Figure 1: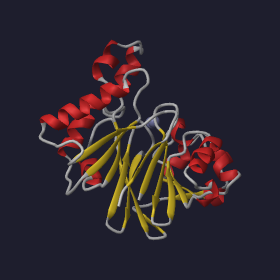
Figure 2 (figure 1 turned 90 degrees about the horizontal axis):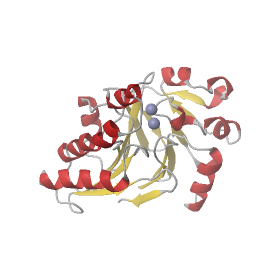
Figure 3 (figure 1 turned 90 degrees about the vertical axis):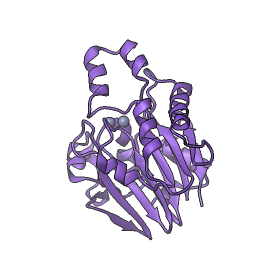
Figure 4 (figure 1 turned 30 degrees about the vertical axis):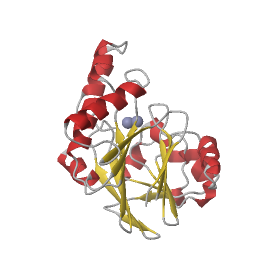
Length: 259
Ligand SMILES: [Zn+2]
Ligand SMILES: [Zn+2]
């Protein structure tokens, strides 16, 4: 299994996951050109993608869709309400839009959406399974519900939101309504909440975690990483043995290979 977070944050999100011979994207919130170029650097042509799984309709998750569907005819999977709420719904070719139910099998990879709490129509995260490996992607989560805890458990690789430092957000320049939205149950997850969730998640073996959707305004990569590492250590997790923590970036790919 290969997991490449091509871009992460409010300027655009896209994660490329290869399991067996199946090649998938979770979200396509950067331009089709950038996705094509990032995949080319990894030796993959954009035409080889077997499917694009969309978490929710916010533009930082779907901006590449018009071109990816029109030019490359790639299949897009999303919840019905998510399709209905997309700014670009009218221009997506009908043949590319596939409503996802409880789960779908794509050439031996099982892809399972799970509900998350966020201010969108029907937002989801995804768990992907192939042979004995599991990868989960959960970003844009206001708070961690029991269903999220269950869905991410026993993931070998987890892409998980670590959006903001609460003090930076509170003391920062954002207007109060925006601060309130981010901190709400349907907003974004703080570094501390991410850390506690990772520390407590059920796992069997070494788990690799990408910290994702870092705010450029209300977070710093080193603050996110240190906050999570400190809480994990305090909670008795051995870093690099039990859990690996990695950062993701708005403008470059973060990669790992597992199994
Ligand atoms: Zn987002
Ligand atoms: Zn969002």
